[in-house]
Length: 377
Image (cartoon, rainbow, N blue to C red; front, side, top):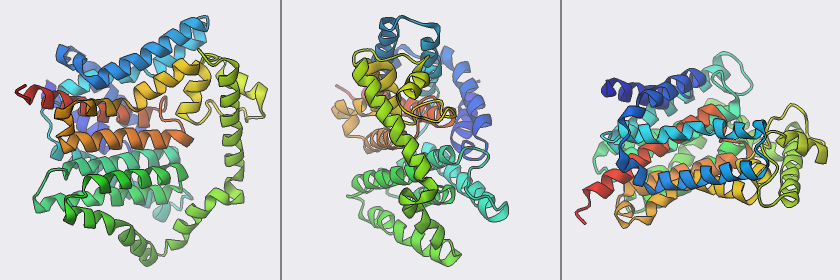
């Protein structure tokens, strides 16, 4: 049974998020739920799991200190998928980085292909694969760059196939015209170059990627689209979005200063923000993970933010884990990528991105525990 769940989890969780986001999410979450009986007690010793537990506990305390209004408990339900880290770690404990990276690569290529169909065949202004363009690009960016885990420590010539992961990620982001994911792939590229510094051939292949993308854009006639994406940050077309984000981040700061210890709670988050500044009613959050948690939970919310988003880095407190370059790369990429994506558009609470985050986090826990158990000391 677990073999079937493992295969379904890898396909639904890594191959399909860019082309059928919510179908993939529901199947992936179902696989996580079915895998709960297979959770081993040893997983609870993971530093990553401990970090998540501290973050969620801080959020629980902030809700109690806020008066425990019914609406405030909703945020814990929203973050409930992070429990899935435990069964994912159990199910994927025998999956190698090459296999995991291959499924990510397939997902990134699928996302880029559906984006190309959206733009070139269906004349869509922004690619999305049936999803919000920013969410689509976020998923594509993470899948594309995390696929490089398959090349870490791999000396065979086949490792160069994983360079197509970042290329597909860049294609998805450009086709979606999403600025936050564009910043994220820049951060992820820096991480990748740092990790592959000693593998000079792979390093040079990655370094040549931006040039290859530029030449492809020129050859396809899409150079103007790419330039517009870079200039959009200052354009009139996105000025309204920029202004609203500035208002939301200002409101988050004011709300934090009004209640710095335990925040305002989740139930009246946007209503409180809209009484402070003229934020459009169509927004249901403050469009930033850090802003959301600082406003609703104060200092305790900030602890929650760091406990969740940067929990992958806790694996690197172990010297055994630090000696495994696949673990180092995955820890840096998962935390750095999601932190950057969540700066200007929430990741936590948005099912496609958050479920992918949980899946990658669970696999990192599996690698962490495997390395610890293999250590003779």
